[in-house]
Length: 188
Image (cartoon, rainbow, N blue to C red):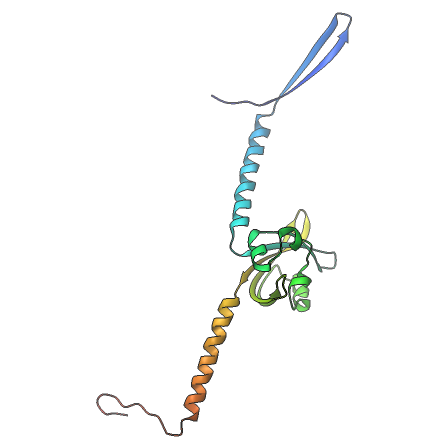
């Protein structure tokens, strides 16, 4: 059984024959089906956007290619930066990213760039992040989408490993005797 949707318009008409009712009907089944498909599609993409563990933000570019305020963001952004969504949307990239000047120029020439940078959260704490920036059209206006991954812990681990390696090198260099390896067979 097929369900059909109709738009019905009732109009009262006065004539010599008295009061009459004019009824017009228009089949809008295809329109209703398209609306449902759009709603399902929007829900799928909203779920993907909001459930992503990486921060996803979008900001417009002005006519000179300079970044404006953020216009969209997901839940992960509030967790990384400590702002509510409403608070974050009052910020611009210049408010959260420590070094931006050189990168702003690249938005004008490249569609996608990847880089590491330092951002600051609501409390002013600095965090190391990896960003994939993509030029997009958002509501028919030029914009940039940032996918931001917090790599602060990874950077701290890399720094610890580097320090251990430096300490080991210092220890080995400070040993006055010559070190050599002797195999089981007695060969050096």
